[in-house]
Image 1 (tube, rainbow, N blue to C red):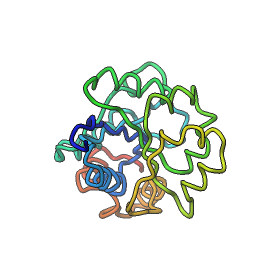
Image 2 (cartoon, rainbow, N blue to C red; image 1 turned 60 degrees about the vertical axis):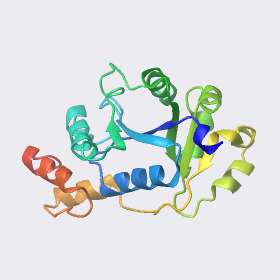
Image 3 (cartoon, one colour; image 1 turned 180 degrees about the vertical axis):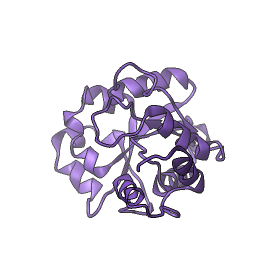
Length: 204
């Protein structure tokens, strides 16, 4: 039965400002842990997203692409950055489902976002149509979180607790601060990303 399971495309959304080794490490662990995952697609948010210090769409897309082009299991999508506004998650996933018709579209999120899921746009439709791989943050326990929330509990089938993943406290905010201080982010971000940042004088 395992081989008959529909292959999945897993959507990894975020600002990627800049993309870090930890982002790609999580994606790598994900597809290696679950046989049904065909590919992980990184989806950078539109620069219309209200976030401080967010560099332009094209810079973040190109940094992701430099890394994804070297891994057949990774891809990067322009679905959000090419839109005239910042899409809701349900809109992004619906668009990607049309693009990858033969696959099941899934989504990644941190347990911190799982807590807020009920407040998202069209949460009922989201959990009905898409499965979500949940990465636990800090001391969070996904199972306890689900059991203590009626909405999450009633839609338990939508959530997959990611097993055996490496937790990292490194953030893009930390990387940007180091760059502003004129310090190196080697080993924090991929070499391709570090070179791109230097060439384009980003985060100074």
